Length: 248
Image (cartoon, rainbow, N blue to C red; front, side):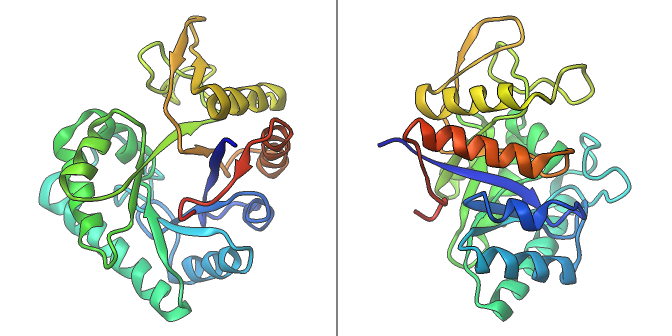
């Protein structure tokens, strides 16, 4: 049987978190860089635990004004310290609630920048490796994020996106370009099934691209996110795909 994780980025102040946590198998909780604070981390974490959803941290560039979507915001040691601050806060909340941090997924521009930048990827992986238990690092397969994870002795979770358009090289179409985010639920369902079952996606030029995926992301900050997530889960289960969190 094909097994896949279904994840969502939460704790960012959106209205769909509680509904999404009834659908997804893992979540990535904003920890203060682009959104969120100690109270929102705790609230989202409690809800995730109540639903049996794997808990992960979602650190970013320390850029609340730009919601973590301004590329190359900072780098080097300042970035490392910013990530450590976010992850330490997240770890403190997890300790208080008795939660296990199973994974870490970078947010927004930090994620997309690190896919192709080995120095940025190394900063992220080193910060994650400092956490107790060395959580898994989530990122796109066959990128600098995966290379950095291996170099720091981290397990890696390959991620694909059910609601984002892909370029022929396997990278995501930038959000600044038209058509970067799919809005049609049937298209999202179709892409999710192909990614989980066949490991491939149709790029925007019509070509077929191979994409390795252990987890599928559906974004929680778009209108109708919860309904789309339910539709994705139903489509996957109809095809015999088992939905399971990253911690198995």
